[in-house]
Image (cartoon, rainbow, N blue to C red; front, side):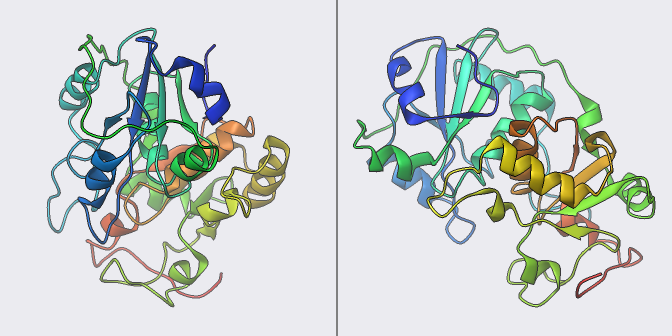
Length: 284
């Protein structure tokens, strides 16, 4: 069984003790960066390791240059994956308690380094608990493996490319943040409010239903075909506040069979480091 977008608790449950399956807990809170680790230590899916957004899934922040969550060095990330027992032939399952907003970052990063057999647990930790499935406390380890990255640089776009994309009628720039942050009405994280001119709003939370599960592939396809408005996915780029929740939209696209879009890792928090870059507010 190979899963590459989403997986259900029922599909994961038979493989908890399978060494060729690696489970990674990505719970995190921007308000309290180590709450997720504490929650993991109290209870997690048996066999799961913990990935910290700042420490494991991000590189060094350079004030005034990078966004809040730049990518780590490739070799550093590959060593981390190897230490988690992830290598060729390993099915990875990632989860969080935020509808997949943080888990999707690791899902995308694994694809970025050439590992496609990775899926996000649909419904995450709340769904696992809601189905009364087993949990375990403490910190777990796995036997290390060799991870050999096969980088896909075409999945990433930088600020100069974004400046071109936003002005190209044949391309589409998509903002995954909530609509109020897009409009510049309620910015509580970054020092400047607004969005990149030319972008369209597509809040990642709208990929989920009221139960916190992803919409069906058919519903997601309908949503994103309307958002892209005829632009091929390969000509679209997605961003958010710091290159985390935008991966949720890319996961939704992939689940809908609309793959090949790109991610602006620096996102809004990088865009605003240069005062010469334009910003917009309201709805365009």
